[in-house]
Image (cartoon, rainbow, N blue to C red; front, top):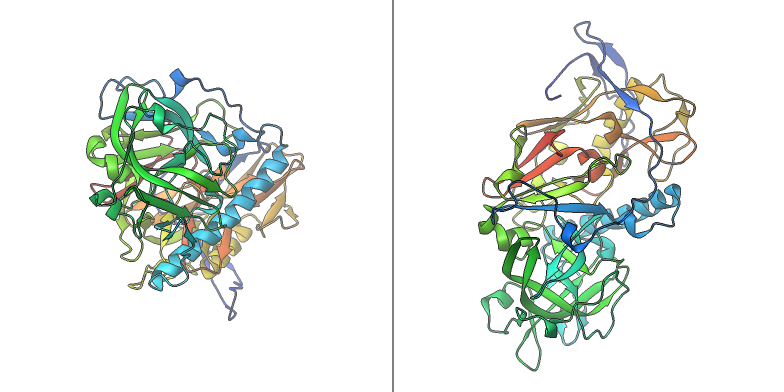
Length: 483
């Protein structure tokens, strides 16, 4: 359901200096009752099983024969932790989330300061050329495709919060443990190192050069993890479709908290990301659909090409940050709870200023949506009023609005609608009230941040086909369009 509604007014009476404390009263508007959704109470999901042969690297598609369309199957990173309990998996997810948000916010703030505070660690005789906002070197979703000629199939993390494509390469000075054998470029007929004088090398912020005049790269992450090696070009194979000449980092020294996958496919807006490099081939369009891991009927997926855009999508313009080209910025104008706009949430709280501070990004690798503190406090208090019939529970981790729903199979919760410029996105109840333990505790899946940067996370995106039309400079949200 898309659209506006009205039924009660929330009045913010007091704001403290550092944190917002909203005193909320409910006044019926036009005599209309509040709007509610039914939440079916599902438990915390166990780790998904990982069964993926090389011939299943892509979803079957009637349009697969077209070289201008790719359709990838995505798996959640929890599939690499099959022995963990559901509660342990959720705890690890929140830890990854906190580290990632800190790194994304730090990168945005450093860019707004003109680069002050950006790490410039010196390794192998050159300063880091690309600084990623991705914490811990892994997003939440990964896929499988072929690298090289003949193709070697590898698991690769997908991430909209970073640009560079990279993978671990032999010989390894230091490599972390991965599921597949380390990629050996000497066994690929299509591998080619990028010369120092190449325009491709100059796309790096601070390119390095070895004694053989080959271009060097380094990516440093927010937690101190890094990857460095030769910058190169290679062929990537997505079932029947080969994409030659993709610039990627062939990492010989990869250290830190990387897990399982062989490397990373950067999906950001920067000029070295996969969408930017392969854009003309796929008409500068891609989309993903992330399904709740408890809904095992259909897998998460990603599509490149014209069919990536759903006919039912509502689009909002992309906003350009001149100081940071990686992130997908959008304009959030307000939020409704129970059918009424929350008056404490003004568009000015999310504005991207000329110096590059603030703004709202859509990110596949952040789980819980983070809103600037004033906006979050107003949203939280409005939701508490609308859900006052539910039994409260103790706070849990970063969540300060939780409920004891043990013994119930479903409950009514107030609707939540995100109002982007040109697109109202009405969230399913399971996208904002989520299980956090095995005892029936559910929490409101938003959080506040002291950063000026707000992030729309993947819990709120679940079940929508999120389309990135780079040619049209817009992002679309299509509900129930994951088929």
